[in-house]
Every structure is written in structure tokens, then in C-alpha cells.
Length: 520
View 1 (tube, rainbow, N blue to C red):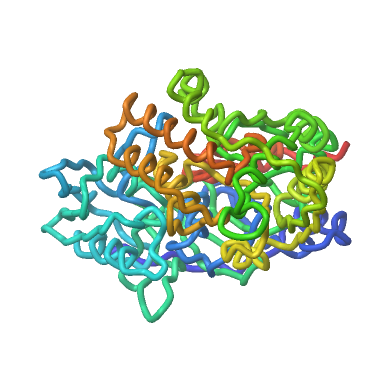
View 2: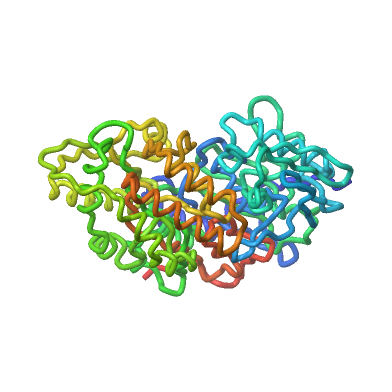
């Protein structure tokens, strides 16, 4: 049996200490990074991360915090996705569909959890069953009716309906397989219970986390000795951490601050993330589709992209962006245009009061909200803004407390397929329904897409669902973001992942001789 890695007492390295003095006055950053143990050539260096959002649910893998666990390479899933969202082996080596609603996944042998226990069919079935029984259920499983049972060195997964996308569904970080010891009481703990090349050994609330290399990893030995994470919602502080070398890798460098950093350290990747204005279709002024249409007509996307993103974004013509290349030509079909032609005629608006909410965690959103408010006011609305940190505003947004809400949303977050996003955000009773939309035509279009086999037919059905959603004007897509990731000169082979699932991998390494200071 693999034994657990012995924990070494961490010491702050001279590089981090010096950089910390430089950014001492920046809120939320000084003291966040723990440099880890001194490392020699054999053990490798540690990498420091400045991440955008703190955990929302105590790093529970059943929440969006699962994507942090995935980006740190500590929790793994049965299936992974390649660049084209095609299912590939992960903790499962192969799978087959044995009936319309039944699949059998063979479990990879000789895999140990970080607590030393062996990955078995029983452990996999238990983890999946725990997710299926969770309240709320992870959105990737909403309406699926998933059941998992062990079958020797395999697990048999059944669904209530035909689900052609089940392998891709099981790639969601929210369905990571943790050791049985993770599932005790009312919480799920990823500390010391994953299977990845890095073991999560400590979490400091919403301040940071520490991971050490797991020497018993089934896929080989990671090049890094560990990962030190700081959660830094303030974009200015994250950018300063990159410039000064306080962080090796920085998430989401704000577009307005890119010019303050050495261009060689900034990497821009189109991503399936859309900045969207959600309009409350259930109550208030936007319950009237004609008033929603007036808001849609008021938006000037080009102005927002030029002024806030300094051209580092793509204008949205739909909910799905150019990161999904097949969407671009698909919107030119007569069928797509016919659906959009059913939109309501914009109403005349004069002095209609509305509340507009957004959050500060993505630095650009408050600036976008200012411009959107100005554009809506020019169209006759009277706008009151409410801007808070995401953790303090999410519950109100999901409860429909705002007439309009500005959100940056990943569109293929879970399965590499946008249907789960459509279901969560726009289906009746969707788990992330900020627009409070409940429209039979939308539900039918989403349901049709979900039943369609992967490939061109599914893409056609997805675009029909997109057009049906847009025809309600409950969501006004503004722009498609590009991920701007900062990496110091010390970093090599960090992942630049449009789906935001990977960041530090088994192959990432640090050149200790290089300097991380990128001051200009």
C-alpha cells in the first residue's frame, strides 16, 4: 500500500519574501503565498498561484470549487476530454454502452488515493452515488437519474433516460472520484483524498491552499514539489503579483492592466466564456418581452469591448463564442434566422426603474456595468446598480432579486458540451436560473439537443436551442472573453486551458535560475 507523503515544514523563500515587501500595501495579497520547503534539483521547485476567486463551498467537489481541484491536478475523473471535447480515458481505461441507459466503465488498476487506499469499483460507485444523492445535485447530473454500482473492477452506470453524452458528463470536475474517507458527515473533504499528482494538504479558509507532490501517483512523478495557492479577488493585486514575481502564475489578468506587464509574460486564449446580461423574465419590468427587447436594442457591444476590454474580447452574436468554431457558420442558416424573427418588437421605454447587479471578483464587470447602465438609461430606463463580491451576491441573483444581472459565464463548464449550461441557466427550474425563465419552447429545444447524438446533428440542435433562448430576450450576450493568463519567466509547461480545467500539471516545472520579476 502506498504511504502518505511526509509533510515538511514550510519556509518562505527569499524570492517570495522580497516580492512580498514590494506589494505589502496591496489588499488581499501580502502574506498569502507560502513558499513551501526549500527544494533541490531532485525534488523540484514549488509554484505559487494567484487565483481569481476564493472557494465558495469549502472546496467541495460537488460545487464549482471542483474546478480549482482540477486545475491543481489533485482530483481526477473517470473520463477526460481532449481539445475537441472527445471523451478520453482517465481513471477509467475503457467503457461501453451495454443498453440504451446502461454503461460499463473499467477502472484503472493500481491507482491509490492520497490517503493510501486503493481505487476500486466500490470506491468509484460510492463517489458517484454520493454526488447523485447530494442536495443540491451537481448541475451536470440534474435530471439524469444516475445510479452507479460496482461490478468487480468496473462500475456500471445507469440513467433514467437515454444519455448519449454520459462519458463526457463523467468528465465534469464535479464528479471527481475521491477516497471513501472524503465522504463523512455532511461535507466532502478533498484534503488528502484525491488521486492526482498533487495532494491537497492544507486549506486556509478563503485565503489560500497548499499542495505537495504525491509520490505514489499512478501516472508518474510530478516535476514540481508542490503548489502554493493564494486567492486574490483584487485584479490590481494579482497583476502586481505577476509584475513583482510574488506569483508564478496569475489567473485572469484584467484587460485594463495587461499593458503594465511585460508582454512576454501574458498569454491570451479565446475561451468558451460569455459576458451576458440576464433579464428577469418572471417579475418586474422585464416580465414583459417587449421591455426586454428594448433593453436588448439599447446595448452597444463594440463600445464595451473597446473601452473596457481594450479590444481583448469578441463581440457576441450568440450565447456560444468562437472558441466553439462550429457555431460561427451555423448561425447563418434560414432555420436559425427564422427562430430569431419571433422576437418581440421593442417597447417604448420612459422612466422605467430597474436594478442592475454584478460582482467585483472579475475586475472588468463593474466597469461593464457602468457602461450598460449608461446605455440603458439612454434608452429610457432608470438604473440602480448593486455591485458586491460574488459570494455576497450570488444568493440574491439566483433568487431573482434583480431586474438585470451581469454575469461572466463559462458555457461548456461541465461536459465540454453547452447543453448542460442551457439546462442550468434557461430551463424551467434550472439550477442557475438568474433570468428566472420558464418557456415551454425553450425547454423543448434544450431537451431535443440533450437527446441528440454527438456530432453535426447535435451541433444543429444546440444552435436551434440557442436561437430559441435568444428569441425570448431573457439573456443578452455581450461579448466572449479571452483568458489572459500571466506566467513568470520561471514557469514552463503550465496549461492554457480554454475550459479552465487544467493549470498546473504533472509536466509543469520551474526554472530556479530565472527571475520572476517583470516590473516595467
